[in-house]
Length: 217
Image 1 (tube, helix red, strand yellow):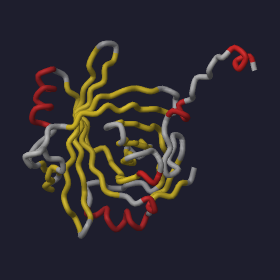
Image 2 (cartoon, rainbow, N blue to C red):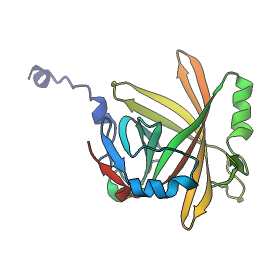
Image 3 (cartoon, rainbow, N blue to C red):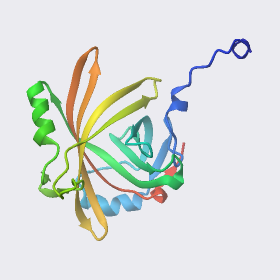
């Protein structure tokens, strides 16, 4: 009551700052369609994907005034990525993917970081475990685009949050009719105590439909 009288505002909790969509929320849990996973996993790079996931952190990326990316990080070294265009409700969802972390490489020098940004992220073609992937994003001339810059704010269950600058490129390969596997390259940079902490991250993913996700907590 005293807070109300004197106009003091309560500090929002992390769970209030981290957006929810489709029932996905920090500290929540969901199950994936086990039949779908069994049918497609032999064609994917990932192995032994879990059907039950606990959400341990939520990432938010504002690509522009109308486009937002939400990432729900789970205990299976994975994250569901939801792309929203024009608003923050389920009616504005345009894409849902499940991503798994494949590899993370620390970057120790400025020269190595510069090479990653210049030629390591955006390439005309990449290979992963013998599979060939083509870049999805192109520039106005039809050539492979430069890495897309974005900033992710991540909220965790322990009530902390942080910002990471990312430079990304999306690749794809067709594995079945109307089905693709994706690879995302991230150059990540986080400033910790005035020092740049950098790494190169590779993830693999595939498309999900909202019906593939069953909220259980």
